[in-house]
Length: 310
Ligand code: ATP
Ligand code: MG
Figure 1 (cartoon, rainbow, N blue to C red):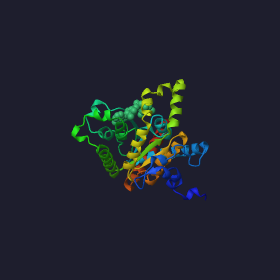
Figure 2 (tube, helix red, strand yellow; figure 1 turned 180 degrees about the vertical axis):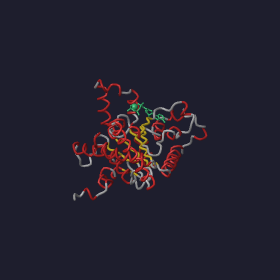
Figure 3 (cartoon, helix red, strand yellow; figure 1 turned 90 degrees about the vertical axis):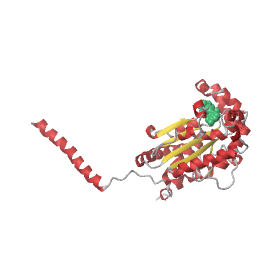
Figure 4 (cartoon, rainbow, N blue to C red; figure 1 turned 90 degrees about the horizontal axis):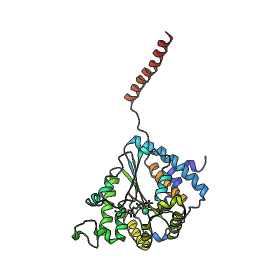
């Protein structure tokens, strides 16, 4: 038997998951995470893992749905052009669309601003048996809102409640919210697509130069790029305070899109493998009823054949 077959799937995939995970234990330094890591793979080997993970994910999703107990919440954050959309598209290629729902969180509407900041995330959560994908999320509340104080000022909060503790309070509230979800059967995995400033520049240039990508270019993204250091500081603080065992962050090296997909796919597959998902078992009474129904269906065919021959 090969070495791999004696290992669980989660063990096999560990090299593409563990180095990138932050679950609140120990120190966290975003700066020490490399954006161009390849995990000792080349693109060809990476593609094979991506493809194998797609098949595994599709099989697990069927069981998750049939079992109807757990739900999976996947949260994607990252700077513009970090590759959130294309990673989601690639990792979920081939998964039954009926079992998944993607929600893209944009600038909040006036209705959304009339509620607490977790409200719109709460109503978009996956039902049991489903996979919910957040393309941006409630974490924008501690990144873009922190980098732009004018956005916070527009949130209609009672002024008395806006203190210097607001970010610590938001980290705390988000962690409690996620712990509550975890205790109710939602498996949460968070991904920060960690791209370098240089790679973002190359991707923006590509969007400007290739007519088919022009539509992706957004002038506003250039303004945000100028605030790069502020965003990195906000992400550092946020990941440090909201990475927990029930809701870990994964700092995904995102300069090589294929490697980001290896890490994301492996993380999801390894987490589902640990849930020990299986199709619901049919009990004895049902099984004997199945036998009767099956026989009746077979008999239908026989009686049709008799009729035809008459
Ligand atoms: P892409 O540019 O790849 O299409 P995107 O996620 O950047 O995807 P956009 O429509 O360009 O989508 O931008 C959405 C914008 O909404 C982002 O700039 C994001 O920071 C902002 N946003 C999301 N949530 C909030 C929030 N709670 N408060 C303020 N701004 C938010
Ligand atoms: Mg954008």
